[in-house]
Amino acid sequence: MKDFLERKGTLVEGRLPFINPANGEQFGSVPAASAADARCAVLQMRVLTGEWGRRSLKSRIQLLRKFYQVLFDEIETITTVISRDTGKPRQDALIELYTCMYYFDTLLRKAPQWLRREKVPTGLQMFKKAELRWKPYGVVAVISPWNYPFVLTMNPVLGALTAGNTVVVKPSEFSAAVGAGMEALFRKVPELNDCIRFLHGDAVVGSALVESGPDLVFVTGSVSTGKAILSTAAKSVTPVVCELGGKDPLIVLEDADVLAAARWGLWGAFSNSGQTCMSPERIYVVSDVYNEFLETCLQEAQKIRVGFSEEAEAPYHYGPMTTIQQLEIVERQLDDAVGKGAVVRFGGEHNGMFFQPTILTEVDSSMALLQEETFGPLLPVIRVRDKAEAVYLANQSAYGLSAAVFGENLFQAIEVAEALEVGSVNINDTMSHYGLPRLPFGGVKQSGFGRINGRDGLRTFTVPASVVYGKPKPYDIGTILRKPGKYTLAKSTMLAVLGPTLKDRIKGVLQLLRK
Image (cartoon, rainbow, N blue to C red; front, side, top):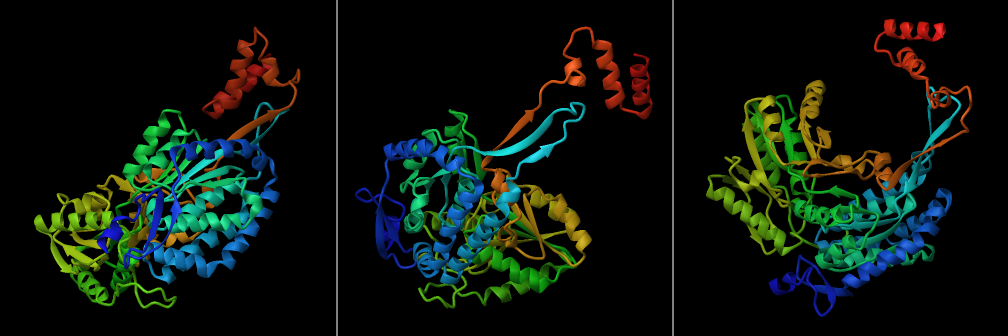
């Protein structure tokens, strides 16, 4: 079985195999693209981008509604493929599709408002008119990950297409079946065939895609992947939007609902086998409730069932690690922590690719477990004196994607949330924010920059273009000041309009009157 799992994400005779990480079963493959294919795809999309971009937004939405219907028609196929390719339960696969469809529906309804031309006041140039328009970049390259291979590919693709771009997609080689499945879904709407291309391949193909000169790159992945893409894109000054890793903190305040904090903290930490960029990876608990919280976590952890079934109503909370490489990272972090004095309070073992939910205490900053993204079911629980120490330690990270705060005093919880150096905060829950389609999602620090979802996420795929129109009028101050010998007039006008105090502005007006 290990031999089969090691082939996941690896080219075999020019093809990428589809391998179920739960049992090592190979259930298909797809031809791998080459670097030349990447260059060709970008050239094709560049030729066709004008036609798609010139379509009215209404026309693009009409075509995308056909694709929306396709996704609904293929729910069972989509969730089956996601489950077999990643090992996650069918219900988790459906939640992934649900999240995507919720965003897609919002996008189709709200895009006309979010991309509407905006009139801009012209101030002193009152005889001019100005507006802001949202123009597509052109060709957008979307490089997506394997942990949520459907939604984290589809959301940026759908945003880019709605905004008028053509798209070249490079899905993860570790979820090749989902990538091939998405390509097949798009083929069911022939009118969309001229605005999207898929490249199935490894990192060589991804690098070639970036080198091929797209107009924008949108990448979701690890920090190392983001840095490599930024380095390559810098050579051609290609803009890049990065949604990278996380090391999300969860803070439990002294007035928290301890059961809720433990239950939903563990759900966030262990869901999808911990392979979620916004899952809690470290919990800071105020000393007053630490013992109660830890004991509650240990009780809740006993209820978690790990396994795999292709049945829609499977009884498992999560499945296997998706890749051997990620399993090895989790093992390394666990060994490092235990070797430096951490205590495993629950779990700590794995059977093949299935890793038990693992809770640790006596963890400190010398351990990789607190410094690096884990992306697996390891959860350190750390005692702190008070909220100030919790905030301080939470911010001592290179990452800044999301966070969670549990506390019944909402004003105090909000105060703590506002002090955290992250892109999103949940109060009294975990991970729910990505499921709100009107909220932009993204991080700070090494978790990346730029946003997906919501109005700001859609505008990520556009260039704001300013347009000013109107002939110069002889009585327009902007026209008058083009003539030489108007320095005193310009100075008086500036004082009257922009003077820092009311007295200064009155002085400027009097000077103009004397003129």
